Image 1: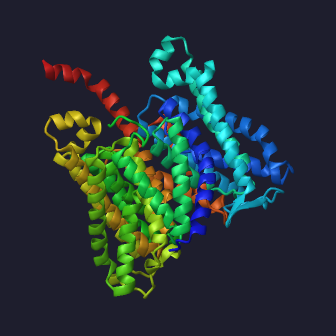
Image 2: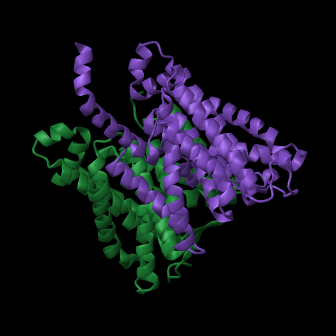
Length: 292
Length: 331
């Protein structure tokens, strides 16, 4: 174990930055979860799909990583809408476990499919942003991570404003609170769900474009981020927008500080322990005021 | 129950006993896989199918069984025939702890599923970081020659008959419990926990019992897994893919049915293995694509699985044909 202040400072900075990305990924999941009460086990794999799209644009098409936003976001929105229409909408009224099994099946199809198509090797792009860094005292801040952090924050704010201020956003919130009442108020709940699912997926497109400059792509990248986002969403309370942002920071810091202090990959054990404890003792999320 | 109900399963069993005397190595390997996963799915089915608590982390119990017998064998030379029971006992203890913790705090449905996934993942990282039990590299069961007393055999026939016996016992346990008190209590808890509680079923105890039995059976399969594949690692036994594979055959075959898991494995594994052999080459993954697609399609079009669907169709036909008789009896 190393407890030097430099390591701790580096862990804090990395944790806050990666926590922002975690938060953006989780906001998408919590939106889908909160609105449709569907636990999308394929959320991480949707992100993997977005990462591959961005990777090919940058590597084969020579695009600037941040320019890929204009393609990755609409494409993954469309992808989400198509998946929702073809598989999730038909089982919206089924038992929760059936929905879990279905999305779990989807996640396996996507990750194993990526393995068959692109092999299991991790892919990494070299861009002009890769090596940009600056120092805060002894700690290093990687500029692509900082951009990703700021970009995630902006996206979250935009999404929040959309949900609060626009008619479509209000419709989404109404449908999430009470499907029947929303229908009676003249809201097309089906279309609202479709929009929410698409938006939740589109967040992943943003994250993919922001992350390609400092993160690799592989078929298992979805499994890792899928688990992380699940933990965050449960931590923050399912469907709780602010909770996802706070949860993202908590898990980002846990992972980064854990990796700095604990040997090997034991920090993951710490993360899962937190998750299990929250599920057992406060399954409605850390931020909720009501108990049970 | 009359004899003719069991006629078809008995014929299948007879054919399975004859199989190794006519089949080649590859076919035998294929059927060992079928029987192993049929057995693991049967074990999962006790908790997931009958008691309705969908564990997505049964790899934990498989792994405890596999690691326990293998470590005892490597370090102390203890026969896996004995290690199997110790692994089963340890897995039961783990299940007792997990079950008590989860059900005591009223975790249900998706929440229970999430906890079990997280536990399995935590085990992956725990074992990966423990160098004394092989770390991320895993463990190899050392080959000491043809030693039936150490569960090691030349060729595949020995393994085949062991796993066939284990599966038959697993199915018999399910069959026996199906129409008895524990089976009824599990189904009652699954269908309506509050109603079961109101009728005097100790639901906490019932669910824990199902968890422990299911874990014990899975761990026994874990020992066989280690002996047959001779290699175990954190991802290969505790990983998410293993936990999903354990339950998929039960879901495809029919949750909460005696024969469902076996039927599911019999139908699905040959297809998936052929795909693995022919499509994916050195990459791997093709069989998983098939498993995933089957899961999606089953959930969309026949969530009760093959046996569940067959039962529905049969009972409908039965009702149509026996309607008149029922009226007569009623009169």
